[in-house]
Image 1 (cartoon, rainbow, N blue to C red):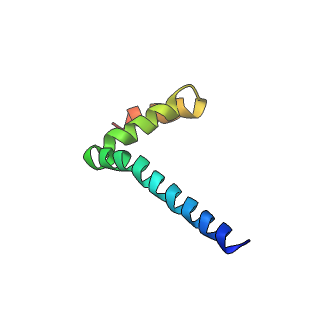
Image 2 (image 1 turned 60 degrees about the horizontal axis):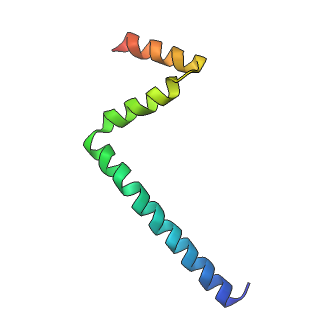
Length: 64
């Protein structure tokens, strides 16, 4: 790998990191504002249609 190739690869990795930071910033802000709301959304997606999901929903209903 030539020094030019390494430099290009480094730039691409830096750009990828910046894109991920920009993409995750709104999600982190939402998590900071409503931490349990996002957890509930994850639970809803887990419970959509699977047998494991229905068991988790039942247990969640029994606990609350």
